Length: 430
Image (cartoon, rainbow, N blue to C red; front, side, top):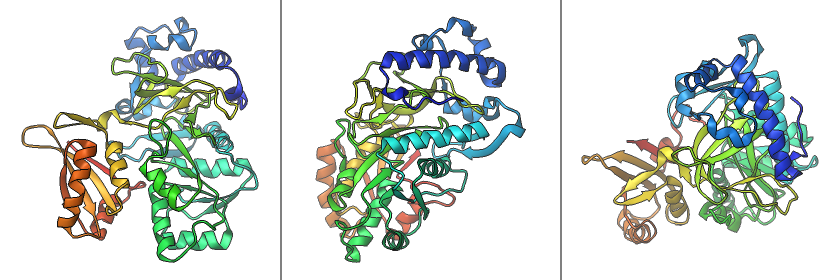
């Protein structure tokens, strides 16, 4: 595919014109090559030639992760011999989905991350310490690797190893930037403080953070982001992506949302009825991929709740910006008359200094209602911790979940089960 790296700096009407032309090409491609979408168009009596612009998207049906889980290989648009790599989703929301990439898709993935690192003020002279796995079919790790190479910067592939090893590498090789999960950065801070490392005098200047939100809806740092920034004054950049959509929304230095890459993805925010919402209104992130050859997606509902903003950014980009994730549609909890999303609970627990580790569990009680249990590790005596914690939860959540306390070793097993690529903070046993 031909990329258009300056499209994000063009006015929105020019971005929409480009995307409308790309959408028509995508529909023709799906009609010709996708077993899943051919069947879907027939079922819904869709004449693709009636779709003339992005403003006609609402005439098309949406798809979801359950469609990909049930019909995984019906999404494949190329012969097996054209597949050059297989990646997979983590499986945290059910059965993993296999994603097949062609050589062109791999080039697109590298371009996507190259543009993302540029957005996050990346420079060829940067040295990135990559604290993510490149194995276990993990797309993000290889995407960041290829993007940094295309940027022309230097790479240190440490993977998600122990804090002591990470700090040894930082001190020996002097990286200027980290790519890491924010909660792991708390482990780095804790190790540094225990070993008298001066966090105000390290070579690291910034961190590209994946997998967890750093900001509240108003774009101010949330408790997790504040904790990192207070102890280790780095420039923090949030990202949002998924394996299925093969595209990232990355913050620029302004920190006002993740920038859409308009030559790679069409963004919609939909309500539960499938209606398109306006900027500032929260709904489900729905994406259409552009330029994907192996397994392209049309109006794919991600399950993530966000809003968007389309005012020009101080960085010069006019592309739409995606807000921090409020929660996931499947993870919404109705608890004692209160609607909650796990990130709201995470933010409270991240801000409590005597809670060292946690896992939030939701399950169905004997009355067929949602029940929440917090699995916690604390250095305090259990009675003392409960006495301090209950008023905080009552004031912030208006309800107090069940509390269960564990050793550090048990919490480690809960957060990092066998074969998991990600730290587990939420368990849905409903």
